[in-house]
Structure formats: C-alpha cells, structure tokens
Length: 356
Image (cartoon, rainbow, N blue to C red):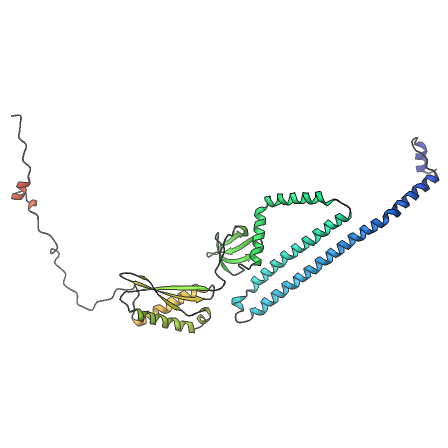
C-alpha cells in the first residue's frame, strides 16, 4: 500500500471516490473547459491584438517624430553656412528646441497610447472601469493641487519652447532676472548675468519676457554742443561721419539702416543736445553706439565744433589790471563813533531816580 493510500485509510472523514464519480467529475470539467475555451481564446486574442496594435502604433509615431526632429536639425545646419545663417539661425538653439519638442511629443504619445491600451485590456477582462476612472480623477485633482507649481512650470516651459519666445544665446529680461540664456528647460531657464552669475528661473515665475536678440535694436547717441554753434553745420558734420561709418566693415553689416540725425532733444542757456539714431543688428547696439561717439567726436574736433564739457576757450587779449579791492567797500557809518552827534542822539536817556 502506498503512503497516500495509508493516509486515506487512517482518515475517518475520508470518503472513497468511485470510478463513476471520478468519471462524472472529469466529464464536468471537460464540459466546463469546452464551454469556456472559446471565451478564453477570444479574450487572449483580443489582449494580444490590443498590445500589438498599441506597441506598433507607438513605435511608428516615435519614428515619425524622430524623423521630423532630424529634418528640423538638418534644415538649421543647411542655413548655418550661409551669409545670414549666423543672424537668423542658431544651431544649438534650434537643436535644443527641437529635442525638447520631440521629447514632449513622444512622452505625450506614449502616455496616450499605452494608457488607452491598458484600459482596453482591463475592459477585455470584464472589469468595471467606472470606479477606477473615478479614483484616477480624484487622484489627478489631488496631485494637481499639490504639485500645481510644478505643473505650471512645465506647461509654461512647453509653450515657451513651442512659441520660440527665446533660445540659447538670446539676451532677455525676464523680470526677476536678466542676462544671456544658457539653457532652456521645461521647468527651469538658466541665465548668465552681466557679472557672470548664473540665474535659475522657474518658467512659471516668468510673467513677461523682453527679448533683446530678436528683430532689430536701436542705437541712440546724444551730442551736447554749445548753443552758439551753427545747427546746419553740426548736422552736416554728424551725417558725414555716419556715412563713412556705414561704408566701413564690419559696421556696414551691423547697421541695418541709415544713421539719422533726429534733431534737438534739449535746448538750454548753455548747451543744446542733438539726438542721433540708427537701426542695428540685434545684440550689436552698444558697439555701434561706442563707434558712433568715437567718429562723431573726431569729426567735430576737425570741424572746430566744441562739445560742452571741454576745456574753456583761451583768450588772446592782455590780462586786465586787478581792480581796487576797496572800491566795493562802503563808507564807515557815523554810528560807529560814540562821540558823534548821531550816536549821542541815538543813546537812550537815563531813568530818573524816584526814591529821592
């Protein structure tokens, strides 16, 4: 007798199974499997089909996005070698922008596809999705309230990149900080200030942006001269210096328009101010202003026009004799002498002694 048979013999609660009962149980099990195998097969095939379609669609979308990003980078590199490539396209900026956009799009596509596939798989198992969706909605609201700053930073960064508000190499004024953009992220933007410091600015804190590197800049120079100078001559000298500057390199590329003498901005008793303006390449405003001041100062000196603040003109007339220092002194007063009649008349009378 085997060990299992001995245990069954010693167990008083054991009920022996006959061959008919065993055959009946096997028949029931086979019938149950026969009744449900088609359902299992359909469910399994449905799940496999859902997963295959989801992963295939995800792979195709990611490949399409990767090709789109590569095409954007190739177009940026093609323009970079042209004459205006350095002005219109920044390869590093375009690369970071395209990579960030591609990363966001790939993440969103994967989340939507795999999330939908997961819900469809749960539905194939006849699971009620209503409580699950309700719980997910409540959890999403709670996470949204708890991490609202993070969500705000992320969404702000996405829209900043999509709208191309600024990029690497741009000089911007973000309100809370200003400087040159070093790195653009979905949550934080890195700026290098004028003193070399690095500012980490959260994208959600940026309420306004002033981009100093897009479009064009305006260079303005004020020249203050004496009010006795001939205005037509001053205008002609400044215009001549500006015309020579616009023909020299590299200023002929940095100046995007003619240098204009706008006119007088201030007229005082001892000076008058002439305003000069020019449209320049973005980021080159300060250099153009310094060169304009240099050339205009030299042209004014050659024309004999003195700006206010220079050395006073030296007179060629002989020096006059010094004036008598006592000429401006007044005559002594008669009240200064106590013996004079005026002093005696001004002296008060003594009080009489009433006690005698």
